[in-house]
Image (cartoon, rainbow, N blue to C red; front, side, top):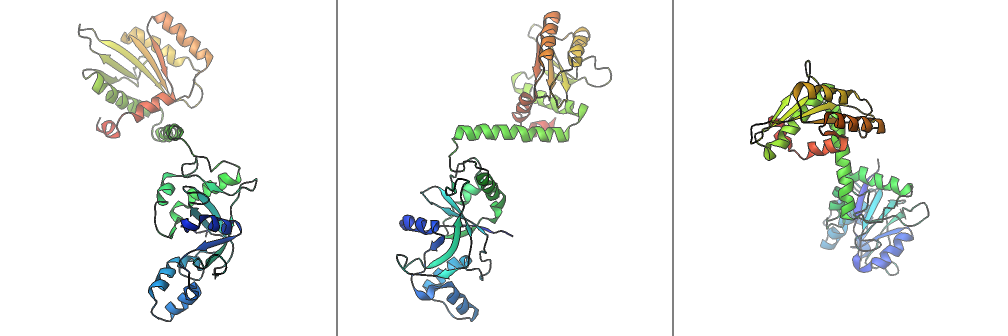
Length: 337
């Protein structure tokens, strides 16, 4: 099973750390003496020996040692915060075993783990922008951790989504403006909300949800309004009747016909039912509330003709507007009806 971890490297040596990473070597600090080698520290721990303060500090890198408990293994995925630039993340995969090497410019960064920096299809390094399209809020929050190394196993799905997007050529290094993030959130919320509506309410059951939504909607604006269920046998063309008392004592009546349709709205049956409702209930306006995402040109023509013929407004509420109506009414209000 693949493990996922973040490794925070030395900000002051970012150019050198980055150069090493591109060369296939993850360098980590707290390794300025030969006895900081994690192999040696592990042996001493197993023998029950007392570690010095700096050895205990070096042991904070223990997951770099594959033999350590919960040690990272070949193939595990790493997120390297603040590489190549502050605020961005570099993705890499472990390709070999731990070794200790203090040579050259890295006298204080002797902990080494062979890695391969993940790359785009055109071989550019896999740089993730934290507000990019594929980054979840949870993964973004996790990068606030100030430890040298921490587990990202709880964000495995999010990271695999990023890796798949990377392999498919998607841009993972471009920030997403807040306005665009809000638009995407709204679209996803509508989609998920409708999926739940579709799963929970079948056929005539949808009338009960519409009834409660309309009651909640009218409660604040028209406290004396009556929202009545008329669906079922003897409905005479409408499922919900809204009565708005006029100060002069004449009620304004709005008839609502509820249709649960998946495809484009094309049937003129609902319009014919509103004609019946006009004759029976004396409605002053009619509404077709449908879960269809759109309607045909033929349907719109028939709606306009009916509006002219009955001389009352005839509106159509489609799926997106209906879902918005549901979402703008508090769940606890709906539950108390």
